[in-house]
Length: 364
Ligand SMILES: *Cc1c(COP(=O)(O)O)cnc(C)c1O
Image 1 (cartoon, protein in one colour):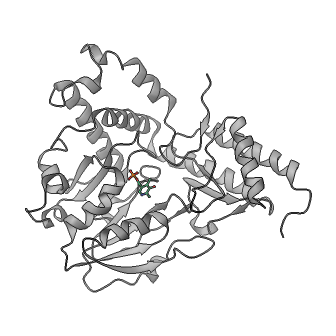
Image 2: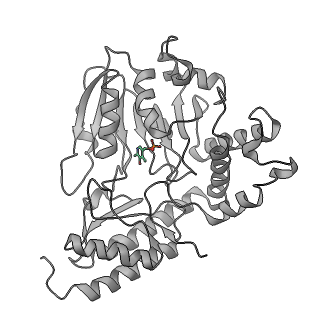
Image 3: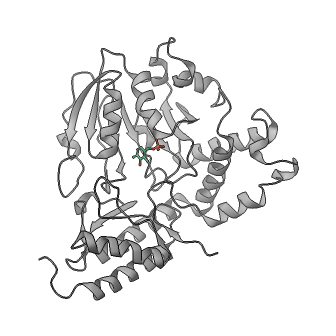
């Protein structure tokens, strides 16, 4: 059976060579007579996988020594809570930029833990956009400023980040390691693995070490960065198979080169946006200045055509193009592992679909 081109927003598509490697090693991992999933997380074989995953990520992020790197269970959503639990007390104010669905969810969880100030709000704007860094209105002495580097649902992305004197915390779940990053601009970044880094089940957290000292000792260990740092992300049984898969994916990124990945991502996105902009049949939903290179969102002249578009694409092996249920429309997620050819096939399909359905009576 042939593989489809999977444009799903998450879990996202993985490199076939990584899946092949995992298959080769599944039954007997490197001669230990069992799979890595069945192996003790205190055994040498697993320890080597764990260490390489962290080492590769450190290298890819060019993480300075004063940052700790963690792999934690619970996905990005647990970080919505862990960030305020560790960095703010109940009396503190944390600043949030409301830029779309995921930023809103992060702010809502933080509000259960500390005071939340809205430092910018573009969530209602159409076309969808991100704040201009200069328009951010911070509160007095915020514990941190939170932003969402790529809004997976709206299809928008921060193109440059605010430079401010208090810590910036970024949810990078849907564009982590899709482009080079200057980590020193951030106090903490986090990302669920299942978009660009591997399967679901883990989140990456990079935190400046001094910030990890803020959390009270009374915070339960599983929620406290400092305890995870002291235990090298082995406080309890880690999600060992997802860590192993992430290790293979980071090897693949290192082999390809992050600069090459970024160039390919820009090329793939440009192809799709060019197809959208060719005339008015397809309407991009994100402001051109903030268009995401990861999640390309657009609409057709009617919902009936959108439904037909999605089902015809599916028949051609172009999978999961339906937009998020909260916004409708079409969304093509083109993470690192989406091949150039998948995007080319989608563009060809879009041109053909338009030819068959436009009849010269499209809006505009
Ligand atoms: C997918 C996603 C999340 C949620 O991740 P989980 O691992 O499912 O908790 C959070 N933020 C962003 C930007 C996402 O794309």
